[in-house]
Length: 294
Image 1 (cartoon, rainbow, N blue to C red):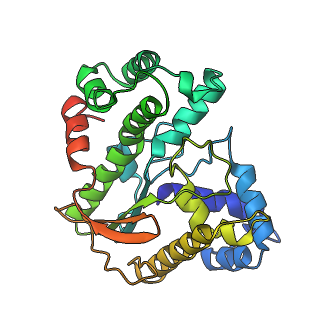
Image 2 (image 1 turned 90 degrees about the vertical axis):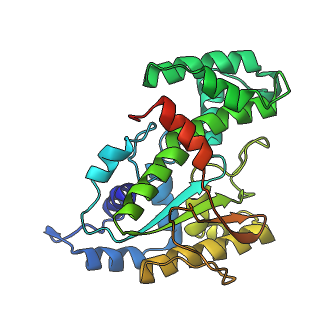
């Protein structure tokens, strides 16, 4: 992924793994240098890269808060791309909403957030992206919520932004690369680490998959749960097998089908690995109808 390359370069620079005696190190030498570092040094370096509470590990779409449009992102993708792993967390937008409400609107009690307030905020933010009819979107996300305020309302807004900024662009990337015969595997990650200190209302959100794949539960000084450890071992297996073979594998051996016209993906949730299909299809089709150029 484009962002992975950028972040690896930043990590190598922080850990003095880019040069030796004024000579640029090769890719193999950089990897060897990184592997020689202590886990604590790598975690400290990763933490230093974080910005304003946002970990910066955005999907394959760029490092901005609002990712690049899929077309621009694909233009930056190496033409030799053959194997692609796309990972989306269950509630990508929870991090965005938590950050926005807490740091921008100074909201400390999520139970006080009303549907009316969020509808106004959503309209303003959506109209800053493009000029289009927002009513179908508001109806799709907010109408199923019977509450007038509180957690369910906030989660509805979170799902809206998560789909717009992360899920649907990732689906577009997966579809496009799959259409040109790249081997694409899609992961939907729904395990919430117990040791990150997220508010209780948040679900598995942006970056939680990366935290697990980096092995944080096995190396931090906190007290990870049994589920944390199991999930971490599973994600390490996913990433390591993908790096070695181009095909990710979950630790229990559940078959992981390539992404295709049926939208197959692996859903990691509640300690289980479940092969599912139709990844965000109907939701993203609506977004595409309203915002065909996004």
